[in-house]
Amino acid sequence: MDKYEILEKYYGYHSFREGQEALIDHIMEGKDALGIMPTGAGKSVCYQVPALLMPGITLVISPLISLMKDQVQALNQAGVHAAYINSSLSENQITKALTFAGQGRYKIIYVAPERLETERFFRFAQAAQISMVAVDEAHCISQWGQDFRPSYLHIVNFVNRLPIRPVLSAFTATATGEVKDDIVSVLGLKSPMTLVTGFDRQNLFFAVEQVKDRSRYIRHYVEEHAKESGIIYCATRKNVEKVYELLTEEGVAVTRYHAGLGSEERQRNQDDFIYDRKSVIVATNAFGMGIDKSNVRYVLHYNMPQSMENYYQEAGRAGRDGEPSDCILLYSAQDMMINRFLLENKEINPDFTAQELRTIRERDENRLQTMQFYCNTKECLRAYILRYFGEGKKEACGRCGNCQKSYLEKDMTKEAQTVIACLEEQRERYGLGVVVGTLLGGKRTKLREYHVEQYSSYGALRKCREQEIKDLIGQMIQEGYLRQTADKYGLLQTTGAAQELMEGNCKLIVKTEPKSSLAVAEKEIVLKGSAGRYADILNRRGLAFFDTLRELRREIAREQGLPPYLVFSDKTLVDMCVRLPMSREEMMEVSGVGAYKYKQYGERFLACIMDYTGGMREKFYFEE
Image (cartoon, rainbow, N blue to C red; front, side, top):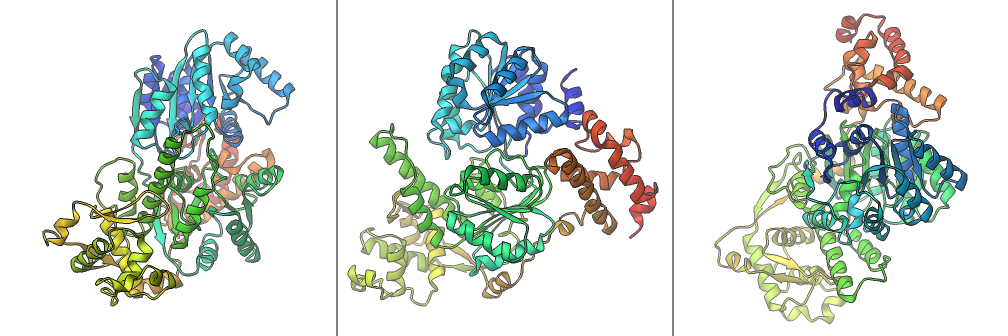
């Protein structure tokens, strides 16, 4: 078979997505490769297809047991023999897996990085024909990334000890330019093809909401999306429990996940979510890496994450099947204090030098400030994200939460000049709270201790609202007139560009949200569930039929002990509703239906379609 036949037979697709074919061809030429592709772009296809075409075994290095289990289960469902080796298996199970692999029964083996250092596994690798080592979640090898794992450094030593060096391929969804260079350097990739397909996830709707009552917002949103699967992320265990109890009292099928629960309960709760026994999971960021559940229709953040990398990775767990999904962040100024506390108390590698520790802490603070700016910007959210990941200046997308709001524009050049004068007067010794308090003429104890009333700028902007001044300063930082020091104090300082503003050579225009629209945001949840998502694709009967197909999928999944999305994705079910296939040939044209999947489930879905439509496709299409 060639790559196209494999794609169609095992994956049910008729063409490759952007970047996939180029990476596959490069790997098949025996060359190293690095793929930086957003979640849902099909990274796994880039190493699984070559693995099935190469003569030997492909080892896939994966950071989490849940990821391995999920990927192997999906491969076996597609008709590909694969296995994983990690600490969840007994010694007898590991022996059996290695024996079968040595006999050529498995083409793909997923393995934890820690396993590479064991003598037993290395003896197996020396005797086997290892054609490729694929490193998934490759950003974990960079100490400058947001999720550095020292165990990933074992990969380099392992590859160097093999009798014949295999092809090395690496894949990640989120990597800045610095992390990308680090992956290439630390892994020792030889003249790799580095392909960045772009970070834009067109199917995701991004929004930031600064609501007074986050619990109320969550409750209403989940109620509006009762038939859909979603993740709610919280910064602390305490907030996870709070939201979990809130939704439980509302009768929502909800579960929870955080490090304070026992391992058995965490696994049970995770399975309840993956197998659609519970539609919602409330979790800390300990949950989700490697979870390949394709039908997550929304990700809500109850708190602001610590970095754009973390946010985009967590938000990216929505809509992995390419279908419309929501990513909504609920922001409060208190989130900065929570995250600073978490960063100051996070575990640090004891091998780091004092200089490395300072650098890491500075980068953590810079990432946190970047997230704060994201939460406060009035500009296009999608463009902000893409600029962060190095995609240059982007135009407004027209469809994120900010682009859909109506803002008032106000010339605040004079107010900006007052802010600069205040900083100069205070000799740039204070952070945002003191500066804003000074400009408002505040009387808090801390302000009195600093004797801010002695400054001429004291009370100079008392006619402005506090949030208005904070928005102004935030925009001044984003536009390069001010900067904040990269430490926990976040001192405000002027830059060289500030002089241009003081001399009146440029203007500062600030967008503000009308009070009326803020009130509406507090009262209404305007984002609709699946009926709203698919209304432009399916008519009323089509939407009803989509629910019928989902119920059939759930029934089959229960019978076989599978997560429903491994039977067919939401994208495949929607395509069935559009095409209404009446034969095997027509069903094989549906996106995501391969030969193996058709053999397992095709006849039952065809029977359901025939029963529901009476075999009259045209009448079904046009009848409401």
